[in-house]
Length: 187
Image (tube, rainbow, N blue to C red):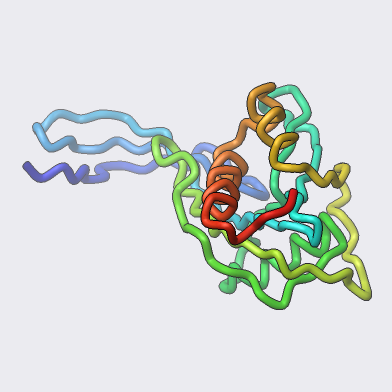
């Protein structure tokens, strides 16, 4: 069975700085119609940075949709016109942590919430970190604290729902695999 849906009509509902919201009327495979609320997003990056002591660097920040603080890996959006996710990852690593890495390793690329959004996230890993000569300023509406978590502290933060976003949960699983393989032994 072909599962494709054909867009019959698309109505823009909102155009914003980070996303656009559209309402689509679609023709379903069975001939019926349905509505789809879709968020269009330019994409994002995330970095799994492990410091020299084997700890994961995360940022604590307020997340308005959840009305709470979270612990997340450094991450950020790809701006309109940017085409190199690795360069964006280096920018975000600098901006959020004051660090640089000459060797970002691609881990995974994935849609963060495919049920209603087309945000595509590029995830990188590094354990080769250096302080930057010139730290970029945070965005004017961005406030965060940098933290270094041991593996057990990160697991506790996950159990306590302080780590609760998909990219950071995936980062923890990746970190655990590296530890099991003996590629990261401290932390």
